[in-house]
Length: 263
Ligand code: DGL
Image (cartoon, rainbow, N blue to C red; front, side, top):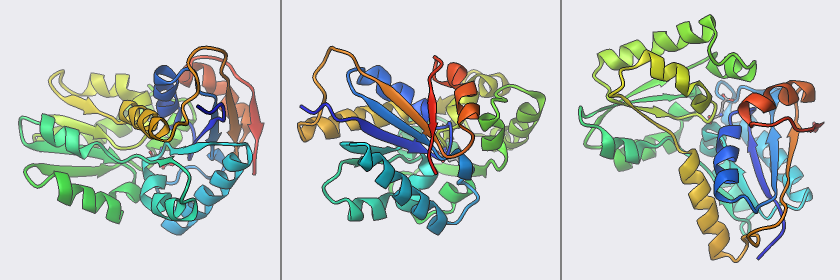
């Protein structure tokens, strides 16, 4: 048993979609969340830059006493998880990747679409994922530059967001995709809009719940789960404008909370 908190981070608000799943599955855990909003989006930045930021944030979270890290970001996982695991060999680190395996198992048309950042889609980790799990299906990838910025601004349903999304999704449907992978943690927040743009029969697959299950497993194996029951707390930091994160927390996290700044 351990009362120490779990550290979670993303380039911005996207990881809140994962934090919600962790909170629902492990309500007894104290959680620390860092939004690297001063450097969002990661999707168009170099892998080296993302590795530097991930290392910096990991150090900050460890200094706050984190017993485990969750990279609630597909792009940061692709760029930095291997290096972080090497650097902090004893620390449980949970990363995330687009849900290619479940999508390949679920598709009936044999065509799967992947919406993700440019960084994720061009990474070696994503290529390895396709080699491993997608040999029997056709995978059509679609980078979504500009979408993360709309979500950061809280524009989950505005005309600009809708037009962007329609422009990416219609070609995927025309290719015969019956399963769409949300390969970026920001995208679950535009799921209601996406549902309006695709037929009901199209499956939308994301990985937040699987990451929460994996975290529970990893903490359990190491005897690090917090004892059930009792109070627990969630704390937030942003490297961007703290008041901007505070402004969107009620909609994206479900309650208003204080946000501190970090560099
Ligand atoms: N939320 C992130 C992901 O899962 C990164 C978005 C971005 O900053 O480009 O990939």
